[in-house]
Length: 148
Length: 120
Image (cartoon, rainbow over all chains, first blue to last red; front, top):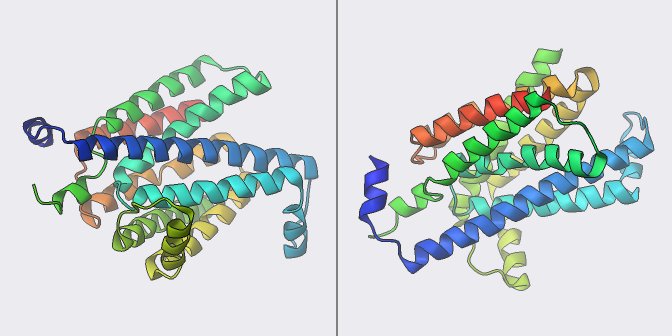
């Protein structure tokens, strides 16, 4: 059972450093994803229909909100990649899913969107799922190759 | 058309994430966060074949998703795309040899139901 083996090994300084590093990069990944997608959506909405031509798409990149969105999504890509250099994919993927909750709450706070009962239930479920995965060892594949 | 795009988004996202993870693991843990060291690390990563495949797959996923939201409502597109969590978790266990215990599966289950509720 993984739970027992985790309890049997006392937490070292390296373990707590790794946890802090994982949380820090996960937070940047989540925030850059939400902010990047929001900025991109706002920019695309302001531009209206831009058609499918590559030239129109390139032109859209010069719109301030689109440019900010793209820049934030580059930050998201780089932090996501950095996180995956030590953390499990099956840890990173569910934990960063909290971005669905952040997006829903941001829509309520900044856009005054109504949050229905179903949405609140979804927010609770996603948060519970993220907390459950968050309690597992972030870098199981890495730990196995490390001498104990 | 709608279901073909859903399948494309799920497959491309799965390939993108799994190959990104493979590439980054091959590169090794990033320790040095000084600008020069980070630049050098990403210079090497950009030439990693797994990362190149991953980036192409991510682009396919992004444009397929954009096309999907242009023909289907977000309440359909978002939870359907989140279904990529299932093949990704499966491949993380089989291919990446990660310790996927019941908590990770239960977490993915709760998140998928939650995303469905949030998107309505």
